[in-house]
Image (cartoon, rainbow, N blue to C red; front, side, top):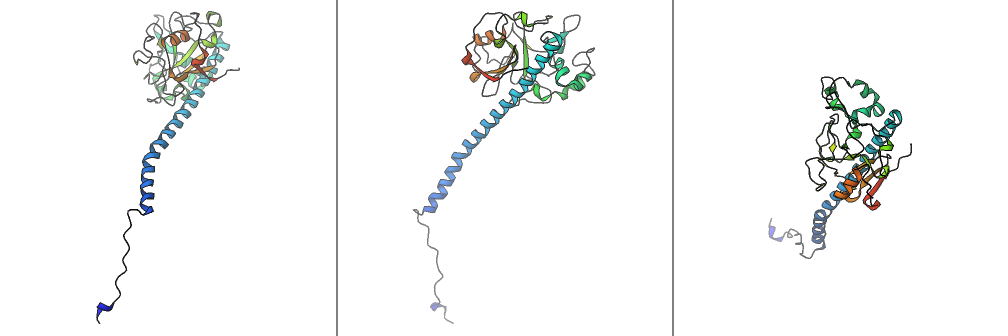
Length: 265
């Protein structure tokens, strides 16, 4: 049979360069490249904001424990307990376990150093509230929260500080501050030394200084047990000095602090 009379195979017309389908596909590709980075930025921002809220909860628990300790003992908790030679042996973070985690507190032995044979077994049992969720080196034993020790701050060596020792406004005098990526064991009796604190360069990583990855700035627990963050993370030398001293007579601009919580026992 002659196939020359068969009808030709239907051909699909070539899509014109002006075909609107091409524009839709191109637009979708461009949209992916534009929106994915934006969505990631929004997601990351939300994660940081959520981390900041969680960090505030951690600090508020610490604030409650500081207040409760003061009510029980008649003074603020010392930054550390020392042995007969003056060597720091036990951290304030361990002392607060009396209120925050009595079971863990009962396992800790004060007749040996913080890293003694028994106490070192507790290292990985750090309570969650001793580390900010936005800390880049968050782990089971590294803390984000420190006291400041020195001659003109609330926590002085060998002194059980009371409210009468604070001549500045307690609402503007720091008890506990946040330090990002400190790499310090939560049980170690190590804090910020006001004598070596980099007041000239608060962004310096050594020695440790007040800092945070939270967008709201570093968190602080004050001597009246309320909490705030340094707005925008702008930790100027003048502000830092005013926050840590107990009798410096400085005045703090309220705009530099963003209240995180009030304290009503």
